[in-house]
Amino acid sequence: MVKAFNFFKRKPGLSVDDFRNYWLNQHAAIIRTIPELRKYVASITLPSAYRNHEPLYDGISEAWFDDEDTIHTRADSGPRRAASADDLQFVDMSKAGSVVTEEIVQREGTVGDGAVKMFSLLTRKPGTDVAAFQAYWRTDHGPLAAKIPQVRRYIQCHVRPSGYAGGASPRYDGVAELWFDNFQAVRDSGNTDEYRAVKIDEPKFLALPFPFIIAFEHQIM
Image 1 (cartoon, rainbow, N blue to C red):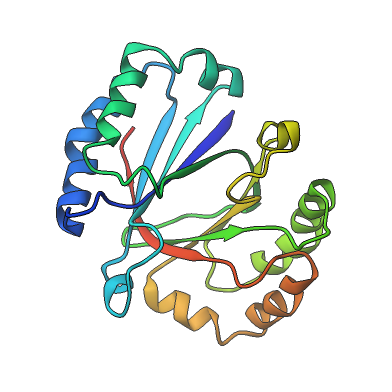
Image 2: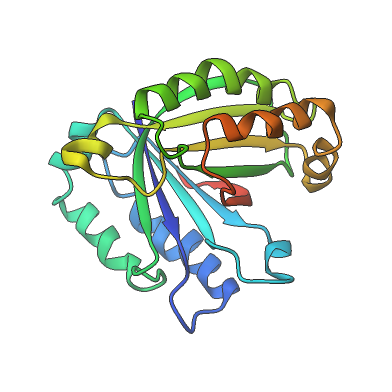
């Protein structure tokens, strides 16, 4: 199974509340009609992100399919065309982006009600090839992040080879997803030795600084 991320910024003139309500209601109803879609999660950026500045994204979607071929061969189906057309109602398409990934579980655990989810949007360090980046992230850096006590679940999402076909450069090389009990747990994690070890290790393979989003997730299907 593969997972496609879409990064959403709301349409100019649309309020944050209207963006969220449209996505979770009208757009979600269209998403549920796509037969080849196995799972879909909408993650909405926390309100606290708007206190001092406009966040990079208002939300991130995750869509699971059986394989990448299904994504492409069914792209012109009626439900998929309807979903794409509806994006124009609430998404600023000039700022939207997507990547297709494979999941690697670094830490599995139970996520309770009220949990928050951090997306770290990663780009490899200049001069690092894709294979070396993915190998280091998976086998060296991943286990370090998995040790952070406040992390309840940790999934690495590595961009698939198709994202680099023909010399293409995807928007990101990977997305790290980490779940915490609440926002305070995110803050508390920054005071741990395990977190400090992660920060020391990041310059070895990542372009810094990298953007991140903290969100509440909503399972649409």
